[in-house]
Length: 440
Image (cartoon, rainbow, N blue to C red):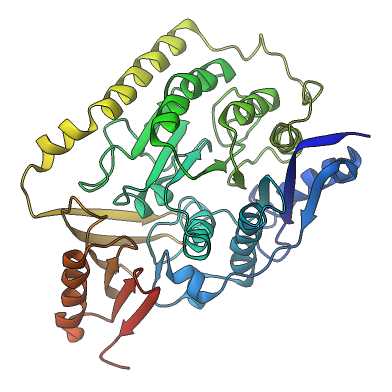
């Protein structure tokens, strides 16, 4: 009988009652084929691999991460509560040492959902991974977290949530944003003034094969992880780099994903994208599960796999090497870059427009963060959407120094309630969320 070297937990949640549309690739069949493959291969009969049933997250769990406008129940369905709950379930199983590693095979996905949520972007309403992480931080006291996002699309939502957090390392490997949604994720995007360098982006050219992805993992991701020394490693596991994926342009394979997992050694993986429902997902997910469990995956082969046919060109190899050199140089020089950009400034501001492609709305944001050497900094976001709602969201980070906390509380207390539809205070030092409105 086969034994898992590492006890591995799985959670399945196909979300039968949630889909973009009946024929859209983001539908329940994404997971049903994987479930069938897992049953047919007898993975749940292997000693050390077990299945957990997902719980639901609470509104309080969501409020550690998001400012939902106007509220959580308007931007989330029951499926979103369960999907995030599936990630939370597997996180608890790992932290309680019921398993060594865990994979949440759940949908809807979440890595395009940012800190402020007016609706759905990139099929994502709330960031299920961040909700899990912030629950684990509160319940288990973990501090340093590394997230390696291997979805083909830039994880712009996760990047946004952790942009100012020096205790969270976010690394995204993705198809170059000049060729794919959401059009972001470049090497010079390094994080905010209090966390500069803990955001790293590795854009890869279209038609990159496993050679290129694994080169980036070996030459950038693993050395940076070794230096950052996280308490826990999360893999934001998008399977849409596969050479058969219908909405991307990459040449990765099931064997490549399995080798990536072996190298990365994630404690927890959370499913993100992947839309080759029959031709890729069952094989990629099978390879990842076997790799997490420390079981031989060399026989996992998807239909039409020919490594020579999908091999990347020498030009692509040189471009990836150059990008990796740049990303690693930014990491090594992060303190000097921070000093050059921000020096003795007291506050940093940024304004931007965020397009919600799934719900077809535009949000306008102005953000201000207090520059601080001791914590993630007091943060306030003035946010309005073209649907008419205008809010002020104030965030106190969990590691806030007293001065930043007092600054954030003053912002919330003195804001003109008549200027906004709603005022939010997310105080992570006391795990508290407050709401003010002139009409309440």
